[in-house]
Each structure stands twice: as structure tokens, then as C-alpha cells.
Figure 1 (cartoon, rainbow, N blue to C red):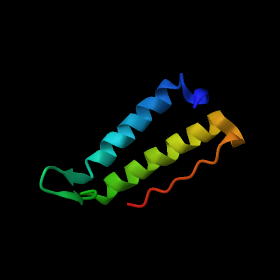
Figure 2: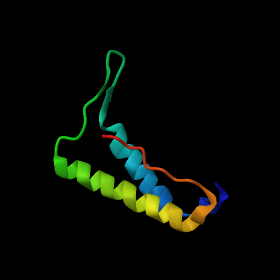
Figure 3: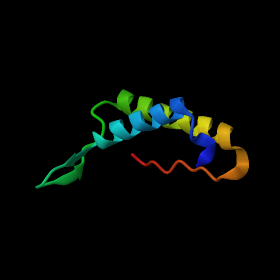
Figure 4: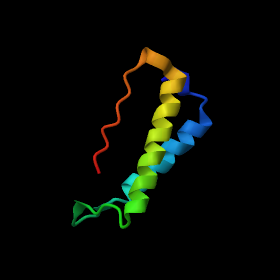
Length: 73
């Protein structure tokens, strides 16, 4: 979306969130499965990052888009 095209901080946060999310899975030629977080604190920090970036996006785009957080981990 063009409203976020130059939002470097939001982009960095989304890349970080995706990187963390990717580590929650074992994905190789033999197996694909959800491993999850090793510590509850790590999960809480992850969800805080998601909430923060969601708020930042909503602030930038206003009511133009419906933004939902459907992460269920």
C-alpha cells in the first residue's frame, strides 16, 4: 500500500516479526511442524511487537483499511 511505501521503521519491524515467526517452525525436506516459543516471555515480547506495528500501521492509514491481528500462537 502506497501509504506505507516510505515507512522504514514499520518495514524493519515487519521483517523482524517475520524472522521471529519463521523460527517457530521446523521446515526441512523431511518435516514441517510448529515448534513454538521456548519461553513465555519470548511469546509476550513477540505479541507486543505485533501490537505495536499494528498500531503504527493503523495510525498511518487511518480508517482506509480494516487491519486485523489474527495471530494465534
